Length: 612
Image (cartoon, rainbow, N blue to C red):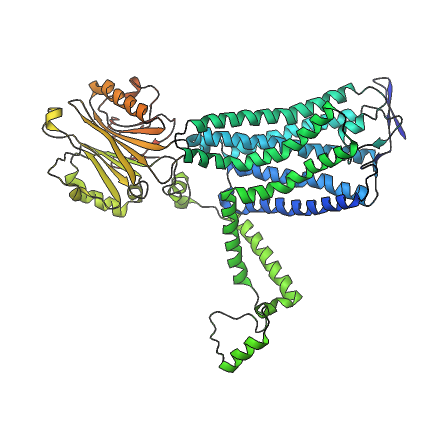
């Protein structure tokens, strides 16, 4: 025994040289349980290492969500490594004595990674809340940098609280027993052996349980209440199911991690629990979740499965390209090979079903193939960091074009034409030569100046569907000018319905409801409103917009057109203007409104143009 004097407190702290880890008491054949834990550890290491390697190599998984998933896999791997090998060494090889310093280190790392697992699940719950409640702003609110900062804060908090908990154990004395009735240097069984006061250790035990286990469960429950509220606002049942499926893997992780821990601790608080039962429940609750987490993400997450398939295809191509040619067994596909009838019959009778794999019987060939595959995988990982696009191959617009028609909001092209009929050839030329034009989800044109004398086939643009609202001379009291039309890209949406058209002396409008092939799960459709308005018709337009909103509650309304000094925000303050560049001379007369802040940015491209 070593005795340390604390002169400042005028007390003597007695610390033992070693502790004795008791483990199971009078349980026959317990060694098989520890062997089972060894297999669990092997699968845990392989599974979590595969998850981390996949996230690192697959560029499609370099998102905010998978920053947290990577941290969870790392915590699972390290937590199992801190616990299971020590359990096997202690009980399977009868090394049940552990030094005082090693005991505290074991306690620190086991509790540190348990805390990280718990708080990382909270970070993943936050990711799901933003993704479902604010899908249009998800990539703005939750960037990779923001998630990395959250994970950094989780690490700092976890290290601090666990270090304080372990440090308080050093302030108690152990006068008599050194037998720890647990399977590792557990916090409560260790400090309860002390012979002086351990009030602050008890306080920290309750703080850790309620703060690091109970509070995260409450936060996750609240987050799913918010998610459920958001899902109830979605009118279509299929869309609700689609959104809920993205939360299934996280819900399973939460249930697998928290339920065993909560049940064991609550049972021990309510009544006494047999030490052997407590050890079994605690070991399984700490070792099974890290084992299941990679399996759950592999089987339940579609994007993860797709990333694995892509990597397997890439790895297969690289390995087959670099596979060594062993003497006569592997044939060049370009080489011409001839066989006689007798040779083919002899081959049929003399060869086994596995004769095509005879080339791998050489151990050196097997080693070379495996080495080649491993180097190819590392090459893919290194290549990800070497590739850095510059100039015309980089930037936000390039990344947006790569997404094609899978953007959250449709890309828009807005222009005041002053006669559509006279500019049809120019539109056809732009459609052939300008990718921004041909890839736009919607083209909106005002001042079309067309009438019933101009058939749709004369105004057709390949790849787009035309929807028009021509000026009615009787309703508008004007004989010329006016008119609105939409060209909607067939690659973006084919399910389009004209909700209403209106024509009056001060206002012309058309409202089209679109259900594209891809859109955020929060909304059921987009409603495009084309407007040609005078300054005095703001209230009339606001009434039409309110009517459309009442009849289509789950739609996102996008209002485009020629506003001629009118401002919609005076009547409907929730709508935001997204055009900031001059559209005609020094004036901003062509407007775009939505209810989403920073949904669009305007870019002048000769014609009046708007891109998402």
